Image 1 (tube, rainbow, N blue to C red):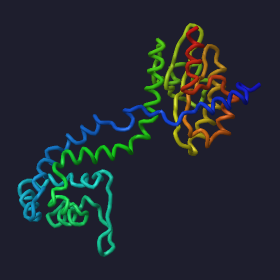
Image 2 (spheres, rainbow, N blue to C red; image 1 turned 90 degrees about the horizontal axis):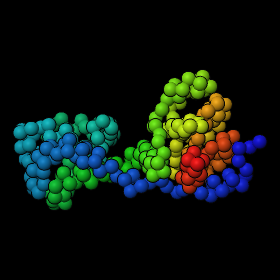
Image 3 (cartoon, rainbow, N blue to C red; image 1 turned 180 degrees about the vertical axis):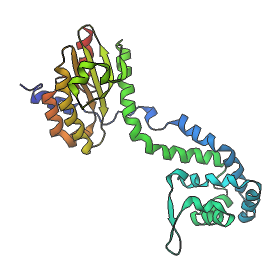
Image 4 (cartoon, rainbow, N blue to C red; image 1 turned 90 degrees about the vertical axis):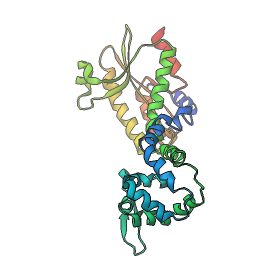
Amino acid sequence: MAAHTKEQFELFMSQLRETNATLDFYCDFPKIARNVADIEISLNTLNYLIGKDDLRTAVEALWNRDKRVFDIMDILIATRKKDNKKYVDNDGSMHPIHSLFNSVDGVMKFLEGTGLDKVLKNQEIKDLVDYVFGVETGLDTNARKNRSGDITETLVARIFDNAGISYSKQVSSNEYPAISQALGADQKVFDFVIQTEEKIYLIEVNFYSSGGSKLNEVARSYTDVAPKVNSVHGYEFVWITDGEGWTSAKNKLEEAFATIPSIYNLTTIQEFIKSIKY
């Protein structure tokens, strides 16, 4: 007998949310501020170049004073030394951008080739510290995918907190010998564990705004893990998932929905809370 009906699955799908993004999802300003602070002295020194008509002479003056300040110039075009970005020269050869910061000629080639020479001469940038804060804000958008999972866990934790439910986070299946034995090679670290007088709930949480092969793999994995956990007396596997990305993996999710009794989304999570509180 299936764990859920077709009608229950269609209702579940209709409840999936477009996004799980809270306002702090879009920019990690503390991290941005730390990144800027790490290079603030060099940026303030490079401010000397702003408004200089004879840019080469200004670059030479800074170079002779402390050439290390040029080491961070790649951030001015939204790249980082660790990214090892490259450029193609006029003769078709390829070089690391950061190699340009080894000489005055290289720095000038960087400034003139990128167009930053005109930006600095025309004072289109007033302060490089403020400018790089904006660059770092733009670069931080690349980290949003990594924050999505963390935000969902934080959101679920907040829901549990508001409901007065005690829980542990990031708990290894090795903490429970019977579960470890049941899982065999499929050892896991569960996002949440809730222990009541009747049962221990081992909970996985995720959110997918967009589709991809990973969703099929996740659904397949939990379809396999849930029966193993549920076969151990006193334990239950719970999966809280949401996001419109599941529309691209609907068939595989439906298979999981037919196998796993305790699947919830951010709308139906209150049903889970009621089931363990009352």
